[in-house]
Length: 144
Image (tube, rainbow, N blue to C red; front, side, top):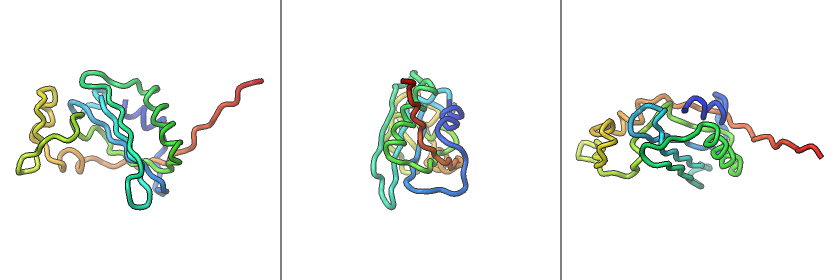
């Protein structure tokens, strides 16, 4: 799912250009086939300008073609030229859950047992960051 999504949205680059987007994948474990929530944030010079969430709920996954098209249209509307994406799932789909004193997640849902006790360093900082160049979606002219 992850590989197909990123393949459809861009190609690797070493020259990031603004505006940029960050794509984060969430699921009950770190298996990209179990992604049930995707968050895309659009970044300008200093701040987040917009954010969109696609949430199918625990146990439901995305069709790579459908979600790539939706996210691609969202990126096009914002003129995104660079995508930043951790190479994999970064956490449970419950979003803002409590953390203990050591910074470990305390998700109450037993479906997310994989993420229990993981810190932000475990979840995000250990991932390689993919930097993708975004191209504008080409509009196909219909024959008259």
